[in-house]
Length: 413
Ligand SMILES: Cc1cc2nc3c(=O)[nH]c(=O)nc-3n(C[C@H](O)[C@H](O)[C@H](O)COP(=O)(O)OP(=O)(O)OC[C@H]3O[C@@H](n4cnc5c(N)ncnc54)[C@H](O)[C@@H]3O)c2cc1C
Figure 1 (spheres, rainbow, N blue to C red):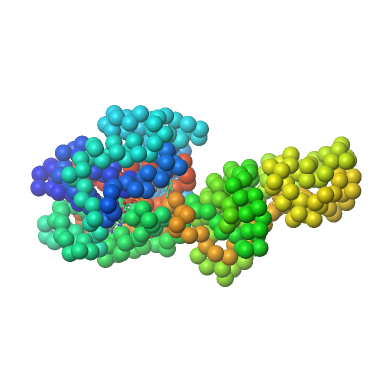
Figure 2 (cartoon, rainbow, N blue to C red):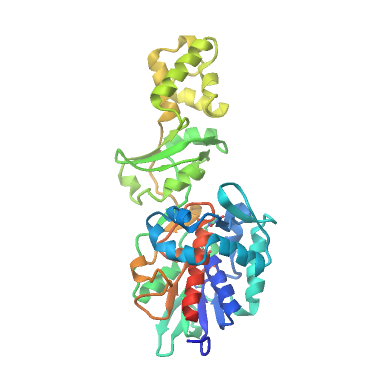
């Protein structure tokens, strides 16, 4: 079927909706983007700390592991529109030059997310974007769909692409209203959980984190719930006034249950992940024997910044001790805080700090090759609304682009 007689309505002008608009524009298919906010791409401006980590230039085979349980589901999309395709599209069509940094992360050369956002909007044409349209309902008709706003405005369309985002950073517009629309069309929403989020620790443990707030350390983090290890995060940890953040923490946040308050949960930090307990113990012993007059916290600062070493010394009860005065038990206490330092959690992470939402429109109801609904012909769901969340590093924007691409490809066919 050709493009004749088609008019596609895209609901949501985030990354997924805007890229879908670009692909439709390129193919000459009429479309309109309906956005509830007063401007398109608000979340896009926040991405990559304002620099927009637009993709991760790995092969689809390597990339898929970053999407957790949805890895094999999304493989079809990311191999149809790969990170290489994304770079080529953005450079050739949107005329934004990109650069690759550490760990395959790709950013605009300008280091400004705004350059991606404004290029998307000018490629699409602002006349194709309607702002202030909050979709609350949809009717399926013989010809297609009628998309209905909270003010009663109606837009007719032959196909609809839902791209309303998840629930994270709701002030950018993605407050979860899209899920209700999907539900009204018969779709199931799997449980929603803030992911790639910072974690608040118990008031008692906050005394530690707030004292070293702003300090980042190399550490691995393990999440324990009811004494069972549930997840691990690697890389670095950032101490904040209210608790913990940074890549290692954000990576495991998707595993923190919403009912964490009713179970015993904590995050254990390991500041020397490349040494076993035994190796570290031997190393500490050697250091203490080699530097008998050094303060124990000075020795600990070989592994962590000195402000953190001071707090560790307090936790281990060895503050002000010289190495020669340290007993075997005191050394074990020091080892414990260097390798197994617990921070208790009694509240689940908040959507306000979550970069993405885990859960969403159930994948079993969406065709993996097209993002088309298996329940409602002509309806597509893309982006964070789906039950797909990726690790950080450009994975989530790549998912949004690839899903937008295959949805438009299907509409074309
Ligand atoms: C701080 C931060 C930094 C991030 N950094 C990166 C990064 O560097 N790289 C990366 O890959 N990912 C990053 N992400 C994740 C990434 O931004 C998202 O996964 C991505 O934006 C999802 O795109 P989306 O279009 O599905 O949803 P969104 O970008 O959330 O867009 C959804 C749009 O739909 C609109 N909308 C919602 N409901 C309705 C409705 N009912 N009617 C009409 N419009 C509606 C919203 O207003 C919004 O404009 C980051 C996220 C955050 C919060």
